[in-house]
Amino acid sequence: MFTENFKAIKANEIVAEINKNGYYFCNEAMTNSFIEAIKSDIEKNRLSINNNKPGGSILRSQYYNTFMLTFSKTFYEFCTHRKFLDIAKQFFMSDKFRLRALRYYETLGTHKMQWHSDTKTPEGFKSFKGLIFICYLSDVSDGEFQYVKNSHNLSQELSSNDFSEKELVDVFGKDNILSFKSKKGFLIIYNISGVHRAKPALNKDFLRKSLFFQVDADDNSEPIYVNTNFLSNITPQLSYYLGFGRKSDYPEFPKCSIQNVPNKIFVKEIFKEWTKGFIKDLIP
Image 1 (tube, one colour):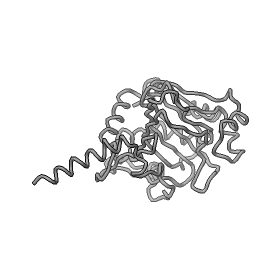
Image 2 (cartoon, rainbow, N blue to C red; image 1 turned 135 degrees about the vertical axis):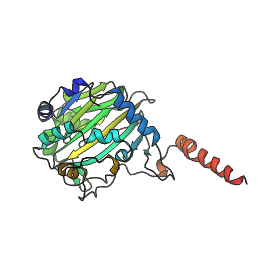
Image 3 (cartoon, rainbow, N blue to C red; image 1 turned 90 degrees about the horizontal axis):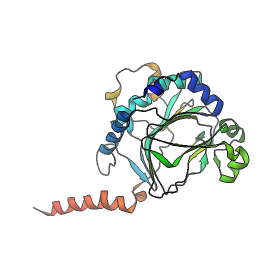
Image 4 (cartoon, rainbow, N blue to C red; image 1 turned 180 degrees about the vertical axis):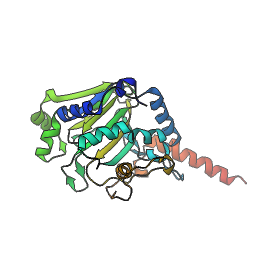
C-alpha cells in the first residue's frame, strides 16, 4: 500500500509539519498496486441505478462514491491503517476521534470550487479539530489541490468557512497559496481549519481522480456503511472510530438525484440500457 519512502516518515514528524504549516504532503506515498486495486473496485461499482448494490453518484461536474467501505477492502485497509490512526492520535492527543466522511471522487475541468475550510456542520461554522487525507489516483498537472499555508490558525479566529478570491488574498496573502501538482500516489494530510480548494482547471477535458477521508474530534459523522466481512479485528478504538452505536446524523454528501445526471451519462448508462430491456420484454 505505502511506498518505502512514506513508510520511513514517522507519525510524530508528520504531525509536527501539520501543526506548523497546516499540512504535510508526500509526492510518492502510495504504490501503483494500491492505486490499480482502487480503480478496479470503482469500475465494478461505478453506478447503481435500479440495481440492488452500492454505487456512485454524479453531481454536475463531479463523480462521487461514498460507499467505498462496502465493496473495497483496499480502501478499508487504507482509511483504518495503523499509521493513519497513529497520526490522528498524536494530532488529537487522544484516541477519541471519528471517521466523519469518505469518498472516491472525480473532478472535471469545468468544476469551480470556492476557497473554504471544513470546520462546517449542518448548523454552520463550528470550531473543532480534524484532519483530511487526500490521495491522487491520477497524474495531476491541472486543476490541482491548493492550500493556504498557516491559514489553519487565522480561519478559526474569523469564524468563517468560505472566502472569495479577494478576501483570501487580503486576509492570508497571495504568497501563502500553495499548489500541489503531482503524479498519482501523491498524499496530503491537512488540518480541516486550513483554507483550500481545487484550482479551476485551464483544460476543460481535465479529469482528476482522488481518494478522500476526514477524521474529526467531533462525535458525529455522515452515515458510514461498512462491509462486515472486512472487520477482522475490532478493537474499542476502531469501533469508536467507525462510529459503532454512535451518532451519525450529519447529512450525506453530496446531495444528488437523477436530475443531476449529465445528458451523455443519462443516454449511455440509463436510457440505452433501459431501451435494451424494453425491447427484450416485447419479444415473447
